[in-house]
Amino acid sequence: MKRPVIGLTLDAEPAGGWSKLPWYALRQNYFSAIVAAGGLPVALPHAPELAAEYLDMIDGLLVTGGAFDVDPALWGNEKPHPKVTLKPGRTDFELAVTRRALERDAPILGICGGQQLLAVALGATLIQHIPDELPSDIPHEQPNPRTEPGHEVNIAPGTLLARVTGRTRMAVNSAHHQAVKAVGPGLAVNATAPDGLIEGIEATGHRFALGVQWHPEYAVDPADPLILRAFVEACA
Image (cartoon, rainbow, N blue to C red; front, side, top):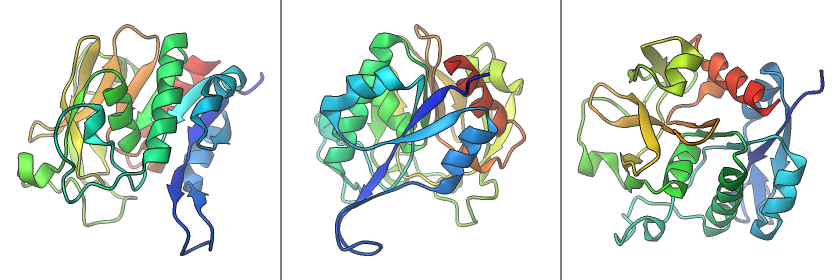
C-alpha cells in the first residue's frame, strides 16, 4: 500500500549556533516515528501563503513541539509573560496551515506546543506559565530525560484518545511551561494530569484532530505508538 504523506512543521532558529544564517530544526525521532507508524514524512518550511498548496500534497498534518510559545495576542488580551518565547514566523505558518487543514477536515495531530497551537486555532485559551497560574508538585518540565516518563495522565472515557489507546491512564514525558487553560465549543479535554492540568484535547466535529501535551514520538509508554499509528491510518 502507498504510505500516506504526513507534513511535519519545523522549528526555526535565528542565525548562530549550528548555522551563521537562520535555520530550521526538527528531531529525527519525529520522522522515524512517523515512518514506523506507516507514514511518509515530509518537512514543511514556513510559508503561510503556500498553506493550501502544501495541503494539496499531503494527507495529514503533524504540528510539532519546539522552543516556542503561541502569542497571547492570538487568544486573549494578556501581555506576554517574561518566560514566553515568541516565534511569529513559525506561528503564522502553523496557524495558517492548521486552519486550512481544519477547513478541509484533514487529519491533524498536535504534539506539545503543537497541541497548544491546535487548541488556539479551535478557540481555546492558554496558561502562559504553569508555575505562576497552577503551582503543583508535578514537574511539568521534568528534570529527568525525555526518554523517561515524568508523570501519568488520566484519559477521559469515550474520547478519541481513549479509543485509540484503549487505556484509562498513561505514563508520559513532560517538557512544557504552558498548557491549555479552557476549551471552547467543539473541543473536548481527553487527558488530564493528576493536578488537573489539561494534557490532551480533540475536536469533536472533525474526523481526526487530536492534541497531546506530551511527546509520543519518544514511545515512553506502550500506548504512544498507537497514537501515531491511528493518526497515520486516518490519513490513508
